Length: 256
Image 1: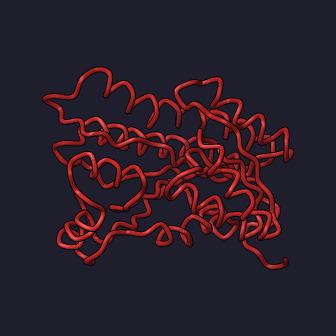
Image 2: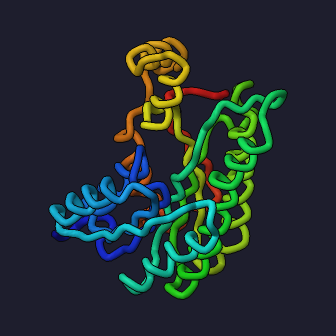
């Protein structure tokens, strides 16, 4: 198909088997990209790959334990090995456990930082390495309004997202001369599998979650996965070739 916005590009998605990551992976393929899905849920990834092929594109799954730096590196080496290059990286993987400053235990803190920051850091290291060989590329880090202080019960998560904001600016400032750009996409309150599971564990149904969010969010509803698609396609496309170091908010007006 002609005229697709991501035709010929190779995009790696960490956490691409769930939530916004999975939706993004499929939509990248709809726009012509070949997509490399990093995650643990092979069955979900294979379903997405079937969708990609129905769109006339392709994808592969790389089982990735993000707490293992070796796996982070293998995610990119297999992408380049399969498709010859890496043009884009969408870092979606992350966890959001309850973690107030005054009660957060060391195990929870370490897990949040290992998955949300450490894995992203080393994935970005690989992304830069392969994009440099290809003359440039686009990195998108998944941000959160929690990065600007956060709610009281999300201290560790808020810190991890704040560090990603710094990482984004570091990459943007230091690699622009190599045509490698990096932007921070601030996601809003979204009923992903992880969010719904967390609320279920606290005794709240998804319907109750949605009603509560509708009362809190200025625009009156939770964000849906589709709300982020056009921004993500833009970031990965040549249309955003001169955009780097930006914080792009899609939060229904939420500022924590």
